[in-house]
Length: 293
Length: 263
Ligand SMILES: Nc1ncnc2c1ncn2[C@@H]1O[C@H](COP(=O)(O)OP(=O)(O)OP(=O)(O)O)[C@@H](O)[C@H]1O
Ligand SMILES: [Mg+2]
Image 1 (tube, rainbow over the protein chains, first blue to last red):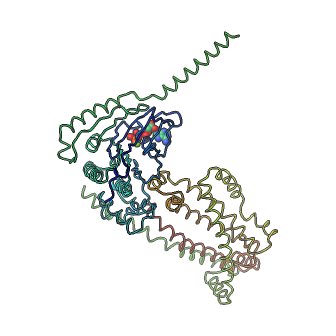
Image 2 (cartoon, rainbow over the protein chains, first blue to last red; image 1 turned 180 degrees about the vertical axis):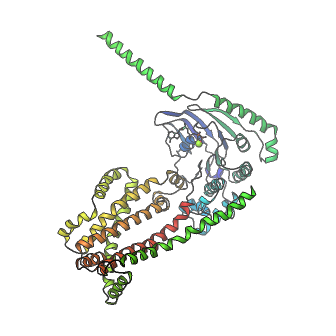
């Protein structure tokens, strides 16, 4: 199979430095986020809904530009078209006019790979995500979970070295999800990509990762980083019943409860605050003018 | 529970049958109505179906029918063809570039507010009776709604699909060829369909004013010389071509994407 990604990307970290981002200058999401990701590391990100996880991936993939600070791989920002980059979106975004297998072939076709070779490669990843037999289905005729798997295969077929995954298994049932987790670990073990894996599921985060980053509500950024010492290779029955697994799980449940309980920034209140300071400032100005006169 | 399920199956079947079967009745019923009404009038005012069929036979036997159809066909090809090319270019540009869109949309609105046949006298003054005049009238009537339809379509193409293609390494021209073009196929077909029917209407109207041949001219001339059979023959032909084009052409294109759009 392909040469291990670690060797391809060399020893360079993915470096997130002093990252600032807000939507339209109003809704501030990140105010100085710092994070280094080792090549070949499997990093899980969890946090309450709306804390900026998807925003982070958009910044990493170059769809958004940081307001301040930077995201760098080998010293350079990443562009969406970068062949090293793979991105599985939160919602499966397949091309409805193509069949399932043609969707998986899409990226290879764009890079000019000959038809026979790209079909073989696509087929390999298609089988890998457990979809054999559905090659010629129109994607809209597949179930939500199957669509998500096509989307995963489409990304993996490009054999990227940096894999951004936004809740890729969120639409799957628990059983399929666990088997997909094992598949993902197997692929990762073989190819050694750097993975940023976003999930709502604590079990999944603990089972897969080398490190777990817990996000707090915006503009909080990182609440905590947990180093995951669970031994590899991991396997369902052993890993999921290990004491360490439970220890992490308990710890993370407490953390999530903590960040979720943090008072959400009440925008109305904030606006009021701004307004009142505005009035105060005006009043002050007026007062100073009055004294001048 | 199982009883209800058993009941549900035949019910569904009973409902499905009529959907398929009633459309065969529409044309024959129209013909029957025509025949019944025609019995109340003398033949030179409202001729019978078979009178018109006979008229058609005479035109064919004389070898006169085909040149008229051919003339109308060439005008449609010229005007509609030019409208396709211009509306594809302008529609996509308007979809992609905000500035061009802002410039273009008021013009479309203005032209669509004017019935295309109103241009015919002016074109007659400039170009005289014949092909050019009619083609221009057809073009004006078809191109504006087509541009708007294609533009709306391009605007609707989801940003998500484009993002996905970019991550998969698609360059700008590949985005156009492999994402925008297939994704816009439903809108382009809708535009073609709208444009064709607009063009065909304008053609018939324009031929009645500024032509010496064509199916519109047949109707007009029939009226002038008081030949009701010729008028009706012309009307039947106008309807027939429109119907055939719809069946043979647009249905075929639509079938290609119907599956993925309605799935
Ligand atoms: N395009 C946008 N314009 C304005 N605000 C946005 C936009 N996208 C996201 N937001 C806001 O930014 C915040 C973070 O959104 P983001 O999608 O990054 O959250 P998330 O952590 O991925 O949430 P989830 O787990 O529900 O997917 C949210 O409050 C959201 O309302
Ligand atoms: Mg998200």
